[in-house]
Image (cartoon, rainbow, N blue to C red; front, side, top):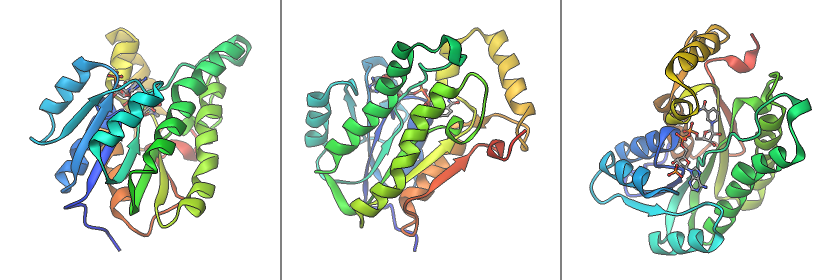
Length: 243
Ligand SMILES: NC(=O)c1ccc[n+]([C@@H]2O[C@H](COP(=O)([O-])OP(=O)(O)OC[C@H]3O[C@@H](n4cnc5c(N)ncnc54)[C@H](OP(=O)(O)O)[C@@H]3O)[C@@H](O)[C@H]2O)c1
């Protein structure tokens, strides 16, 4: 049965930009009171302007366990956790992927997700949900993406066991394909980005790159639908089907 998000409280780590901000907006539009967390004050200030009055915001580095605990205590009991913190540092051909780069990939995503999720358990209400935003590289063989596959694949491998262990709390993941977000806008100049977007659009059945709102719709569905747990939802325009 679809749960009513009205009256619920949701906290989005990595909620100040891109997929996380779109998710926070969509959760709020569905009736949840939301909080967002990001590491930089500038992003946080801009995000709060894009969210309804009364939304909460916390400038916290996901590497800092004490700061995470402080933000969670300040936010108080809540129903839906979304973890959408930026990752992306383990990209490149395997021959160039040093152990240092691979470790950074895990530090910047896998371990952030664990630190946040474990700390949040003390504050999450039993009938709520956890949604991790992972990445399509985990389920696809893409050259240069072995590092990302490992990081996101490790998260995918945990979804089922956690859904069993933490029940009745529900645990799911959304696995996005290529999504137009500020991450890519910061990562490369416009001309190179446009070329990359065209290349990415060409290899998906829907023939376009995704939007943050596409993924946010999946996040809201997993939070609201009380019959989803242990699910990994591909939100990738059909990319997982192969080129
Ligand atoms: N965009 C894609 O094509 C794509 C595809 C598959 C999966 N994903 C995954 O989706 C998630 C979001 O990506 P996005 O494209 O939406 O990126 P984004 O626009 O760069 O947003 C990343 C968010 O994470 C926050 N963040 C980053 N490092 C942090 C830290 N150390 N502590 C706390 N917050 C931190 C950022 O805020 P601050 O900058 O203020 O810290 C921001 O709110 C990532 O896990 C990414 O791997 C993205």
